[in-house]
Image 1: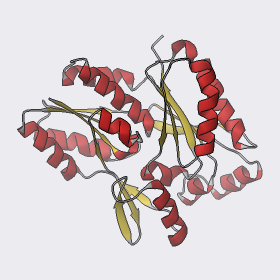
Image 2: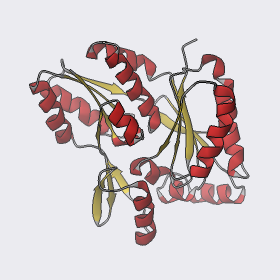
Image 3: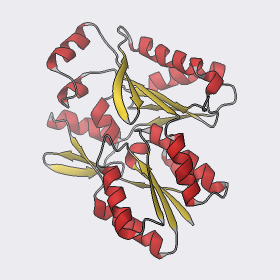
Image 4: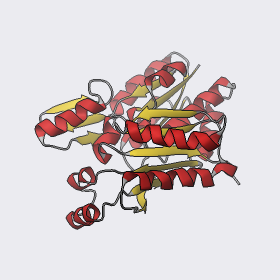
Length: 282
């Protein structure tokens, strides 16, 4: 049996996770006086409530190596194999801890894949892994395929509020003032495992949403039609708008809307929304 395991930053919804028999291991969200497991004992609405109450932005922490050892050992001892892919190794120690655990348990039975992504950029790869598993591919074949697929994922997010980036030390005070004055809604893209500012539209959030929609439309000829994902941090109105607009040109391509978990939300803030999909190799 092949077990598909990911971490809580994958941001797929609970229904999809259950339907595909995916196991999720939580990262940690830490305030000065309390620690929570992402998606286990804290939800995204609860996170934002605590941020307001404590006037404190939480720190996030990787999955410990011992957690991976415990989970991997259980399956290997049962004669099973494991595929794990989670948050990019450029963004968290989670990947490194998984690799070290696999070495300690049995590397021949455990395959660790760098998603080179975050949020449902990871989720896209996890769904591909499930598809390959259901097609009868071996764990090694799945890992080999995912190590190519990770370069086909396109992830972009529009950030409504810059205060989370600012409070988290992710942009300078000057950048925060500059962004506020010009009403910038930066679009963050994930490429090669790292985040960077792709565009800096200013004005209403709809401007940034329309830019992302147009990018997807421009990629139609090479779009992987398995699924297009819209992931947001409590930005339901924006999600409805994007889904309505992209439905006009996506035809029968499935569109899945999900809410970002606490780790992703603690870094980007409420109102953030992204469009994530895969493209075929040209």
